[in-house]
Amino acid sequence: MKLSILDQSPVSSGTTAQQALKESMKLAKTGEELGYSRYWVAEHHDIAGLSCPAPEVMLGYIGAHTESIRIGAGAVLLPHYKPYRIAETYNLLASLFPKRIDIGIGRAPGGSAEATMALSDNYLEQVRKMPESFDDLLHFLQSDFPSDHLFSKVSASPQPEVLPEVWVLGTSEKSALLAAEKGTAYAFGHFMSNNDGPEIAETYKRNFSRSSVVSKPQLILAVTVVCAETTEQAEEIALSSMLWSIQVKAGEGEKGVPTVEEAKRYSFSAEEQQKLEKMKKKMIIGNPKIVKQKLIDLKRLYLADEIMIITITHHYKERLQSYKLIAEEILSH
Image (cartoon, rainbow, N blue to C red; front, side):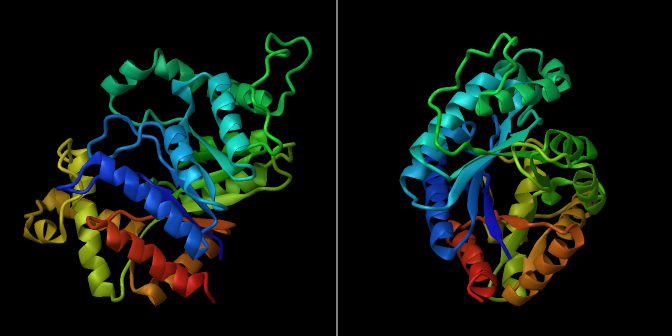
């Protein structure tokens, strides 16, 4: 089974954004040593407890401290940016770190309405134009605009020997159809979707059009996982991240991921308890053998080519341990 890492660079209570970002670098290095295929870092804007608004900056830092693991954005939020600027940036990264760069493209705002307005103009209009913007991005990367196009003589320099891999990220049929129509790889966010994931994955594969980007469908499944030596330990560790997720959605997560002890003392309301149960159903929590079997089951259900794991814990050492236990159970056999 091919495994990868998705990192949101979370800040734990009592720590700083600087520490969280350094821990992201440590996670990428550890993932490389353990045999994970790729490391992606997410883009968020003014969301309490998340420290990375600029994946491209983090990728330069992480690329310089790693040797072989593929690194990328999960995702670049295209409606906020001009396609040319994205192509230039990721071509530069691909020149610095050959055969290692991925561009995951998403359409979400990545923050509040106010943050979106501060970041870009006419966001909803740019979402509507996303298929056209995505076309422009692919043309800039491949330097193949038609000769009569306004940008036919514009180069997204520097030109790397090997182009970045392009992925569409999403949780809906719309994103699946975009990836299929444009002939790119697709990453489905199981961890943040309430939709019929396997059917969306099938929609992507059924409608896939072979292109110069990839010759056949490629599917990554992104899943939230917490693994520990025992399932009881994993459940305790996971509780703090679930509480934090509830707090963030309520606009109260500015203190960062709470400790397990804080989560145990917290009095969940009936509504919060319902949210907790829903989250548990989307997550994989357990000891290494349980986690392995559930990942195998999900991979078969989706017919995924790769599983991308997101793990958030209060203690960064518990996050590293979770990835280590999974790798030892799956990647070393």
